[in-house]
View 1 (cartoon, rainbow, N blue to C red):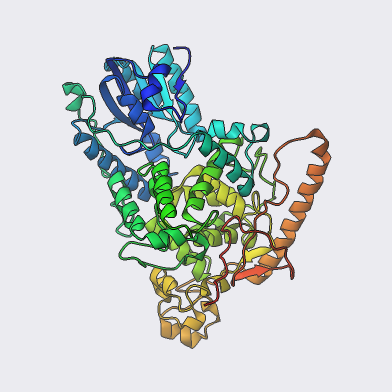
View 2: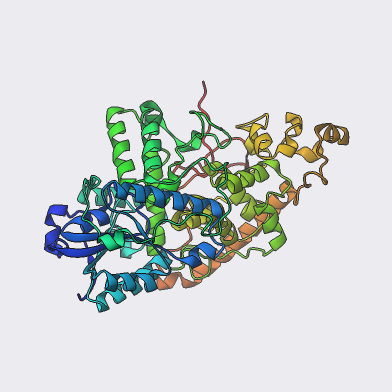
Length: 571
């Protein structure tokens, strides 16, 4: 086979024989990476067609487990997802074969042993995955194995979507992106695929082989944290989806910036003010296409519903926006060589980064959010925004790359395209440029939680402080501190910086960096460099208390990103 077959995303399964993917009696290996599900799985759907035998495989690379770049909470979530997938496959007289080793070593080995003639997998646009898959495609081609790829982790074919952009380069403006996406979805409507009702059998010898899902103990992981309330797997994903969709009015009127970052269990145990479906989308336990279409069904029944960018559909489109930006931008995951990222001379102070990561900043709102992140693997988007702003342009002046690496380690839903994109946004390195708007680590959380219940939950050493001092405990008289059983400087740290002073100084540093960027851009503008990190995105930082603005008058722009909270409507 000269090259891998990429089946167009709008190609119906009945016509896929045209592309050579419906051959008869073909031993087929379906390689699960993401898409850890049976429902709406285009790669699996294609693999089943014409397969005489089907071998579902997942490669667990020991390097991935031992690298230290992925936290234990997310690895547990992955193992739970694999166990759930294995159970679903066994219900269809199949199973998940988990290979231990790098795909470059393990896949050629089993393709020879099982006499595989066709390899099917879902396209992955992460840089690591692109390089890995290119190697596998070559190895398969050299072995005479047909490779069939399907889009399925995004709403549409991102290559086709990028072709509609000027010069094939992604836009950094959400509103412009929506126009391109709308046209693509009209040209190639989403058609959901049912889960298979039966699967081709595996050889009995392979069916009984021991390569199953390993236990956490086998991988040397600590016991799963009881604080993590989001458990992995397609079954859990679909159950959570149905629970949310049963509240149709809430779904129809959902606006993410109006949700609270401090609310705990608003809809029952283990719920938050948003859906918390992001970990399931990250691992593909839930099809984003299914989510999109189920939301569309509800919107059709509720004509007066919320709209993008703040609606639930808007959140799905933000995901597609960042995926498209990442897919079409070289060096997207870093500042150097990244054509859309402004070059800002961040400091490099490991002690400040460690204090932020380990919840030792002395600002209870920031430390509570970072504690929740470490314990639960998830925090609300406004908490993510607040701690990201604090680490970068707001207070500590550390690189967004360092913060993104911490999120990549600790988040259950750590998704490179979204993670790096949000960090560039919050650090005013790309997408959003109103650096004079800054989260206050004191005033901002008071908008949602004046008494500090959130802080008391995640920082129990401060639980007895009066509400007056809960966000500024260093201001409490020593007698109050002793009465609360927590002396600042001994039992809880003093603030590592003075927010009012450093945030003002950092705005000056950002102004200087922006001026340097402007001069640099002007010197090369005659060359027509195309997409740049300059210019406004048409986005507004919104309004809302707790957001400091160093400019008395700022331009009012249409809200296109929930960077900062919306103002509450009057009762």
